[in-house]
Image (cartoon, rainbow, N blue to C red):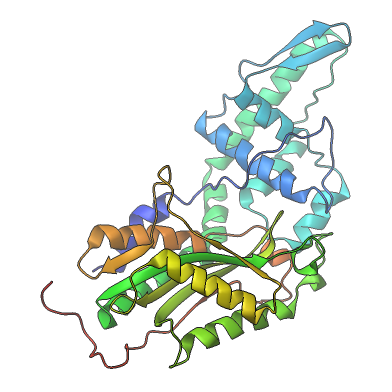
Length: 359
């Protein structure tokens, strides 16, 4: 199987990611540690809408007059862009965030084009309102043109390079596991920390030194326990991504590959892995079993036979989530600490390498 062709469909859909749910923002607000999650989330969502509408998302906005003055009237989609544009680009918050977080090129473009396209939402007369409509549309259309430029596309490719490399490597890793074990049971589980007072889920500020080495030790202890010869869980491989979220704090997204001849129920095995996580974290751990939802296009769990190419594609699409760019974890990891991990291929005990020649 050609690895490049197997990855192509998944890689095509990874250019703009919608991050988190949009939260309503205040009229004029400035980025600082307590709201940086909402700021970047709003900007990424707004950028996606600008691209989707080819720069015309604000074409129909207008101002209405009320007893309190002029106010914007717009569609819900346009309001998402308007709210993101209210973020102050000229305060130290953006510069501080940029210094510690590897921001998406979309976020940089959203801020930095503000110096070329001045605009305001404040209006005290009809003339102000008319000028504002022209200015905000000039900015949005200018941003759309920039996002389609060769210069920006090169920056965006560079930003995605490590993520795409990890995905290709993981895709090949799954193929190699299937060469050693013709039937797998794929388990997906999220592993994090519980308790409001737990400093492992706190995100007060974004200081680099806030990274906890304890988290790394918990991960090592878990996979060491799963790799033991006497482990009741017959793991033949894994992929693991460390993330940092606004609600969950530090947490891992884990995809486990178990010997399909030994295990059948992936949800049951997810619970067992979660219980082991609670043990290695001395009760600090919390887990979420990834249960298939009918409205999700990709499941990527359960039985995987080497000959089931549709299921293999589904598993790889689910694995692509583990390798996507994370906007926050780099702000909490010192130096060049890794956030993505995977195992090494090894043969299943008592089983010869190579695939069976027939089903």
